Image (tube, rainbow, N blue to C red):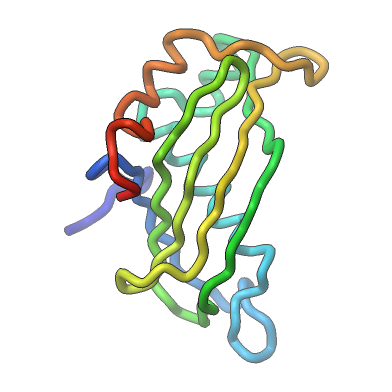
Length: 150
């Protein structure tokens, strides 16, 4: 099955493919730990695009952005040069001005990293802002109550 550039939503999660390139690895061909954060960020960006609310729209129409407030990562297994990875983003829990999202990075169905990320919704001068209802609504297919941790 071909996955569109922005990924797909299936079984309560957004799924985004990533290929490990040489630039992502150390001299031994192992993915540098900080690059998992980059993969997860890219997947969250494409998740927003996939649900119809890309960053550019948030910024231009609502003057809002998401900023990472907290990130917990459990590195389970290393990824290697040329691995095909999938980042699953879901299990969203919406708060007044923030949300929690779980992300799992998988290789051939095996979990290799798990992230628990808190995103703060911020407006002018970096001040917290409540999530507008239309923005909250785009996360409905990804809510924690709608899936069983994909």
